[in-house]
Each structure stands twice: as C-alpha cells, then as structure tokens.
Length: 498
Image (cartoon, rainbow, N blue to C red; front, top):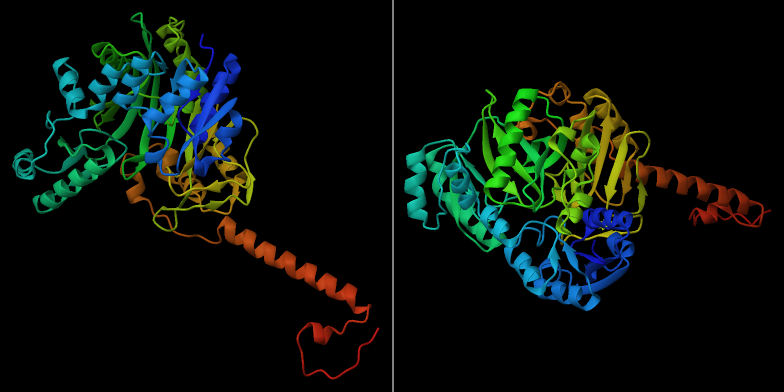
C-alpha cells in the first residue's frame, strides 16, 4: 500500500478522497490556490502546499506545480478526483514518467476514451451499438454544414475533446445549424483547447443511464449496476438515483455485460463509468466512458456497500479485485441532490459570498458530502458544486421521503443554493412516479413560491434587532433618558425625567 497520497483537487471531492485515505491509514497531502487557503480540504490533509494564484489555470491545472509538490513531499501516488486534471492525458503521462502512481487508468486509456470520436469508432468496431452519427472530428465549418445537412434533424453537436455539456448544441432545423456549429466549435476550443466537433442523432426524450465499473490489472472486471442520471440542466446532471425506475433484471444484465465489454475492449483499469442513452423502447446506445471517479459515485456506494474510492486505491497499488460479479447486488434505493451555489430563481446564476450559517441534515439514511463550513467564503472562480446530499431508503418512496425531510433541514445562509429546486422536484408527480427523461428540467414549471430561506432569516433578524432595541429603550427610560429625544423628535421641549 502507498505510504503517502497527494490529492490534486479541492472541495467536497478532495475531502471524500482524504477520508478514504484516513480510514486506510495513509498519510495525505493537499494542494490549494491562494483563494482556498482556508478551505476545508486544506484542513483535512496531513500536509498542505499552495500551488498558485486563484484562477485554476494558475493553480489546480498546473501540472508542473503539482508534480513538483508530489516529488518534494515524497507522495507515491496522486488521486485527481474529478474535473481539473482527472482526465488529462498529459498529467497521467507525466506521473508515469516521474514514477508517481496515477490513481486512475493509464494515459493510453484516457487518450483513447477521452477523444469521443475515437471512442465511438472503437466501440462500433467492437460491435457495440452507438448513437448514429459521425466518427471523426470536424474543424471546417463548411464541411460540418454539408455533413450535418446530410444527417438530417434533430441533430446533436458535441465536442470531440471533452464533455460536461461544453460545446454541446441541439439543432432542430437547418436554419439553426450554421450558428450552432460556429458556437460549438468556439466553446469547445475555449473549454478543451480542441475545437473539433462531431454529430449524433438527437434521441427524443431518452433516459441517461450509466454503469459503474471496476477493473484491475489482472483482467478482472465487475460492474456495480446502474445509476439514473436523466435529470439534467444544459446537459449537466442535477439529481441521480439508483436503481433506475425503467430497469428490469434482464435489461440490467445486458447493459452490464456491454459495460464490461467496453472496459475489456480498451484494456481499461481502475474505476470508470460507461454511459448509455436508452430510448422509449428500451434500446440502448453507448454514449461515452468517463475515465475517472464520478460526482455521483456515492449513490452506488449506498446501494451496493462498496467503497469505490478505496477500491481505486487498492487497484492502483497493484492488488486484485476481491469482488466478484455474483457478489454485487442492489439493496434499497438511493438518491443524490447536487447542492450548488446557484440561484434557481434567477436562471441558476452563480452565487458567491460568505457562508453566514450552516446547518447540515442528519438522521437515518442521510449522507452529506461537503466542501464548506460556516464562515467559508465561496469563490466565484470554480465549479458551483459545494455539497452533495444523499439519502437511502428500503425502497424509492422512503428514499424520496427522507430526501424531502433532509432538504427541509438543510440551512445554508449567506449565498443562494439549489436546495429550493430540489425540494420542488421531490414533490413533482413525474419524478415521484419515475416517468421522466432528459427533458424533465426544461418542462418543469419552477417559480418563486414564497420567501426564500435567506429572506426569512433577514426578516427574523430585523424583528429580533427591533425587539432588542425596544428592550434597551425601556431599560434606559428609568435612567434619565428622554424617549422622544432618543427617537429623534427634536420638537419635544420637555425636561429630562426619571
């Protein structure tokens, strides 16, 4: 086992990895930007090193600085979490070159699966169904126009060099195609340094289902069943759950086998996620594979009992999987709500500022993964995700009931958060019945329905302050103070009295 691990990330995911290391008895190292000097993950690490100025391009994305810290402090391995450098081929390759274990797949696997067009072609050649579309990246706008018109509409434009909703556009008619291509190329170039795009046929109202996999260096592969990720806004997930409401034992078996086949086809090791789109007839298509730990991995942990982060570390240390496919089963149901520093009443605009008060929910079946604390200054520079709230129940109804209770207990004052949005979803008939798809959020009617938590807190503070002032005034009345004078009534000509 490793003697020391560096966690190359921040926020709740860094804390999550640090906790796993603590349980395994492994000393840890954290890195931070100047904006994160007082961040929670810095407090959790055994050692902490500043790696640059607040912008991520000057800190968390600086490969040289992170590798330099790892070498100086004697870290044998680096865990990248998700985001930042987690799927960066150059970072994984540099770690390999320096003799530092990258807790994740090889740089070759990241390169193969990170390029979405190469991954699509690889899967198609292996006989795995993919969403119909192009199998090469496009950089010429005229060429892209010609191919797009030939494929027909509706059409999905995607970035070849990355995901997370960046460079993604839905085109429903030819008049929209030219501007969509131009915008998608510009956004892809800005986000990934790679302007290439590709086309997929746009599936109407599909479900987004993903399978968590684990694979060691000895050819052993298991899947940990599915997660439902269809509740998305602008192609970014907001709520996940397991099991999926549309899943049957037969469909789970078929999709799980294909997920494992994807892994074996790419000679992939460590944890990863194979993502599928499922149409209304339950036909499923390979979408992509994420070569990292997912944001929503705790959903799977709750229903399977497997600690995925610990499994990552064991696999990277050269150990064999002790888990067999026959050992994997789903127990109960779990739901995750992503708590982001965004204002759901104002088109989910980012919200930054100081956490004035924080009360986290607890109780049976509740799990909170958080990167904040009372007094923490939430920066505007990074991803708005600040915490994840998860609930487990013996069945889906109990998991939903617990989520509603937990959300109602959650108090984050000082910034806007997505808590009101999640509460609204938990009361939605389509969500409760499980009859939803990737278009759920766009169809959802969500408006301000009364006072927000911050407004209620502000009103309560004013009422309290007013009462306190009145009490002080009454007390001072018997000490020679004139109440009219204190109230600013300059017209009063009376005398001081006791």
